[in-house]
Image (cartoon, rainbow, N blue to C red; front, side):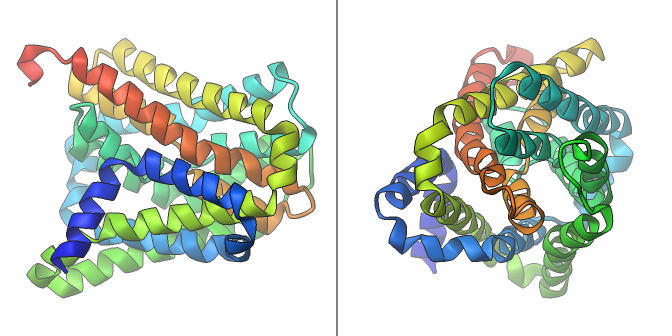
Length: 314
């Protein structure tokens, strides 16, 4: 058990490198990963369960202690990120199918790695956890509603079916994880350290499976999709920071808001694209590429923020 906890801690610190490594393996040896693409929703549910296992009911107190920064971050994410996605797809010459993937990423809640990146940046981790929980709980309604509103002119989208899918693969596993942790009580402390290992395994399988199934398409248009995904993450981080500073937030809170806004739940976009946009295979690739890039870019951003941390915040 000690070895597993140690492995979990090491992998959580290098999740970007781990994702890149297995992405390369999936492209080089697709036959070993292709099977996983049919189970993306299941793996995302496992990731969400792992997220729920890390959440204490006390974490919800942040919603009431810091309602203003949390609500600012919430609206910046669910209003600003879809608009940025629309801007990106209108400027870059993306394949039409990939456009759907970029738009779907922009409508997703905060990613599970945002809390770790906030910690790396010296930000307000409690606020970051509260924002992730709040946006994730809202996702079953907000994500399909936003995507239906901005993408219905591109492709017919079933709002009800997408709501149901998001409920099953995001909300129920998260609530299940919270319930299990509550039920286990103090005896769960040691097991909580394994949660990052669960999440990273799920991310690797989702990314590896989709990449292995789309190697040829990735070689054809992967560069422009990667550019779009990188721009989306960078603009999201800068937009979140700009909004936070405009609202005169402290260093810690502005770091948390910027990371939470810029780091999206790419796994959710992959799962929803696989379930509801199966007629458009390229729609899953932006989420897959974004899953790797945003961890790398987020880590760089967190490192830069840490260097700029004022002495009073250290």
